[in-house]
Image (cartoon, rainbow, N blue to C red; front, side):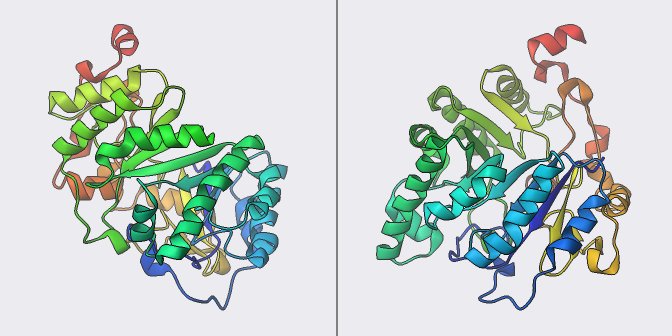
Length: 349
């Protein structure tokens, strides 16, 4: 069921992060953006929506973008009773985000930095600019949190960050961040040729992180690459630990399972903003979002991964993770194994 839509409101961004999953879509200027009314009309035809996410590029790139598109979309979502998330790197003045706050359920930022030198290197900004932005990101996160906003962050599993996740979590918790999402760095776009962790070292790094994480900070594992159907008992033990310990969650991948992306600059409807797949339709040509979603369920690129183990609350792998770390695996022939299940679930079974 289509319960979530992500709208990419812009391909403008003031950073060029080396890991950006949509880096090749970024542009120095945009000539066109669809009218808000066309976007909301398409959303109106998706009756089961529960959430709306705003992403980019950088949704806070300019006051015109914020006032003309982001706020109206958020107001529309709130009027429908939807939960909302804005994906932003928080590098602009705090006032810009405070204007959004009345209609935002979650501000979601990125945090992959040990220090300002990391920030400069990863965002490809000059040292003097990086120093200002690095402090502003932290001040904005703390300011929004102090105002009562729910601030979330995400960190990627990379060779550089793997041993730093515990420190990241403690720093973020001190800023008032309430959730840390952790997922592999996707080898797409700008990150296509960056070093990739192997599964054993990734698993060891996550185990260390779980031992070092800040107490009280919700940790959400997105696109978790250690499924309960793995033939490796170490993978299943990690799945069980993450599903059993307090303050930990595993997010079933939403892309194509309950969520689609709409590009506000072209009207294209896609499975996700960074999937290397052709559009499923275009709202300017009258594409119906539920119909696009239904077509994806039968798409040959998705059918091999459309699996479900309800006993483990697992809806199968993320496509990019599956292709990158599990080539050749037949997911539809696998089932969650009993020793991966938390004790309560195993007892019920």
